[in-house]
Length: 88
Image (cartoon, rainbow, N blue to C red; front, side):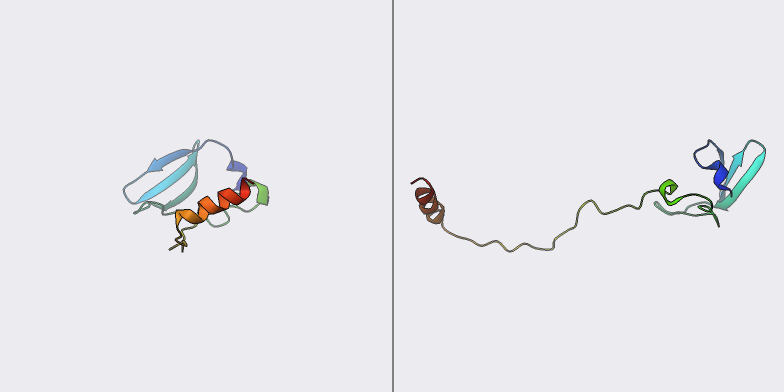
């Protein structure tokens, strides 16, 4: 598959076990059909000839799960006293 097809419209021809990509009467690539969500197939040399800026962005995590957060417990009187000090 050539980088000359990057950003252009192609036709996708699905079959029960495989997928074909076509540009007019030229078959560009054939690969297995995905069997589960998120499964990806890449053609050998798919990114050859493209600059790094033309490649799809790397997905970065939007958030990180923190297993637990330790929170100190204290009386509301502590905050009332702090407010009294700050109000002077």
